[in-house]
Length: 111
Length: 115
Image (cartoon, rainbow over all chains, first blue to last red; front, side, top):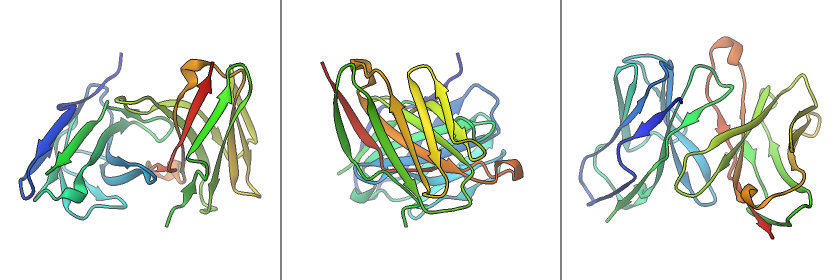
């Protein structure tokens, strides 16, 4: 069964901390994505990557960066966490846009 | 600028009846549309999709209708079952044939099936 694994289900971090959210897929997919889900706003794209070492900004990249050193791993980095980054973070991978496979999500709370 | 909109944040339907979830979009370039279903504490899962060359696609109890002139799509679930209670997101994309893999998601509709 294909899988996208997010390393943490729940995280609590302090304002100003550097936060790493990890995502690993075992499907040899080229494309990987980071979204955040907020009530009333749906899923919004933060960053995505079509290949190793390649990254592109999504709709809301401010305050975030990403790293893709290996094909299977896509990391989201909050350089200095703020309370408005409290959210559910979802990683996804795909080989085309006809179907993303999502991870279970990481609920991040910044206090 | 919300390019994909789901104007009903929530919907309650009696078990066994039809559930109709609606989605509107503004970008006329969109040529592929998908519906995802999300349970709490899980990631969204793909449900059904439709290409802009079609106006209907059916898969078991789920049917998606596309009205390109109105920039509107809908998901019909018949008959509705308690396990259908979830948040439903519509999503859209364009240019997949040219390597554009991004999906733009709507805001979601929480469907509750009443036993």
